[in-house]
Amino acid sequence: MKIFVTKRSWLLTGVIVICVIVAAGMFLDLIRRPEVFQARANKQNAMQVIKKTETVIPVASPDFFIEYRIEREKIRSEKSDLLRDIMKAAVSDDVRKEAQKKVLQMFQEKQQEMEMENLIKARGFSDAIVFIRDHSVSVVVKSNNMNRDEVVQIADIVKRVSGVQLENVAISAKP
Image (cartoon, rainbow, N blue to C red; front, top):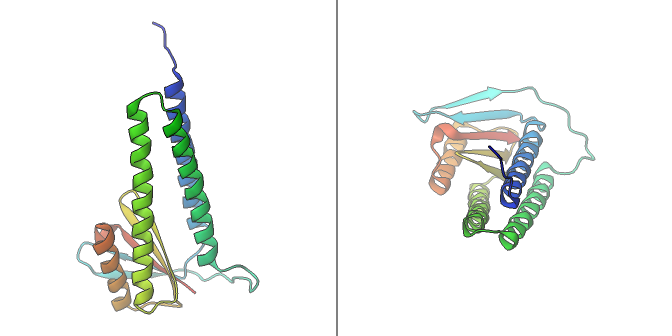
């Protein structure tokens, strides 16, 4: 029995590997940044606030929110370029349609993230970053601390815009 490896299968494997690397990089960047408070909504909509240890951030360090937005756009741009290259070089319509589907999904996630960030800022917070993952959303709000009502408001915004269930929403505060 001979196994034939086509250019399409190598291309598809390469795309999957690159997507995994990008996702891992974004995840590692997220976990390297400690949050002061983390809140998670559960099924009964009761909030549980977990206090974490606070680390000292040097005064000269760049703003987390600005730095993350720049990095997020850079990664999205690279991913978009890669998907466009795949669409151009696609051997079959199935590969091309799958790449188009991923580009559309990426833009929809970007739009949802921006909408949630702006709605959270409209609630009086100075800044917010939203991370959309497969079936979960993480929010980091620029605040020294949050009360239960603020966490509930943010969770409601996330649920309305993204459709993600409350038990899959994580909300953190970062000064």
